[in-house]
Amino acid sequence: MPYIAVTALSDVGLIRDHNEDSLAVGPWTLCGTVTENPQTLLFPVGTPLVVAVADGLGGQPAGEVASSLVVRRLASLGPSLGDEKALRDALDLCNHSVYAAADGDPELATMGTTVAGVVVLPESLLAFNVGDSKVYEVGRDGLRQVSVDDSPPRAPGRRTTSAVTQTLGGGLTFSPVTAHVTACAVSPGDRYLVCSDGLTDPVPDDELENLLRVHEDGRAAFELWKAAIEAGGPDNITLTLVRIGQ
View 1 (spheres, rainbow, N blue to C red):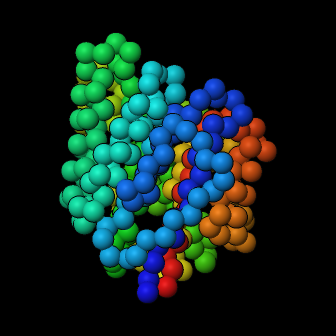
View 2: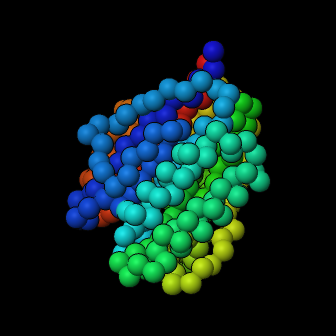
């Protein structure tokens, strides 16, 4: 019987004093806390399964509040996300919810979050993002980024940037978002990586690709986390690996 294996890990890293990342795997959420070890969950193929990582905006208040609000909303809506319109509507609702939660509360003003993820359907997959958290397809020919970074052009000689041009929440007044959504065909053996930039900023794509070529599930998650830590662990590190099994 076809199944979906989802491995998740979230860690504060070496520099930050708390974790502002959150994640959703189906109905299960992990918000602003740390996993002791990579956790793998199995789901049958059928009902839409949402897997998402949200990265609270650093340098602004209550990033962990914004990220947890978004993943909890997506987890509750997950079984209804059967097509692109439903997914876009859900992300719009998440954006409104972050602004509504911050309205009138000075401690939450300008809180915001990025989000990236996939919705696994019986015969296809919807990859989505708002901001610079990422979704990769882990294919036989290498690693391919499916998400679209909402970030300004990089400065000459720089591989990364901390600026984002679109987020859920993040301002004093409401701003709509246009989510990036890509439909992909899926078949047994397909794998996807969803992660915050705490992984991709310190670890280049070619190193991610090399690790994912030889490892999968829990071992792959551990090796990816280890690479980010060995590169200085400058930010919270949250990742999920999605594998279509049979």
